[in-house]
Image (cartoon, rainbow, N blue to C red; front, side):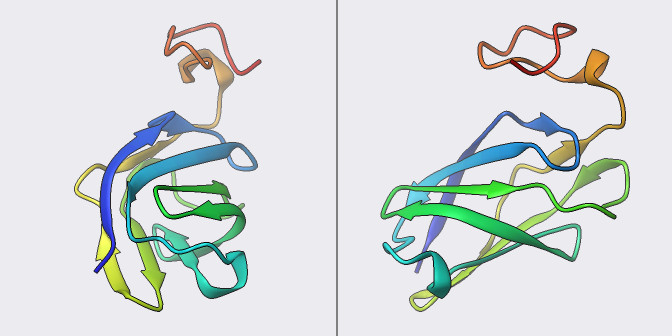
Length: 102
């Protein structure tokens, strides 16, 4: 079974890349699905301990559940992904609030 341990960043805009850290994700982007608030996300990269995906358009604002499905099983992450509409609320790569994305 896959596990979901952390998200980076944990607040993002639609279209932003987000990393999910965990275990048992596999290696093939075409074998992994990610949904944010029930909306399918584009999976950009996968390795056994990390998935990078693009936040889909149309996700409701606020904290949204993150679900991951792999050939080894499915998991709903304990942490939610905060969806915002303004970069003033987004952390940069150093989790420094208010500076927007780099």
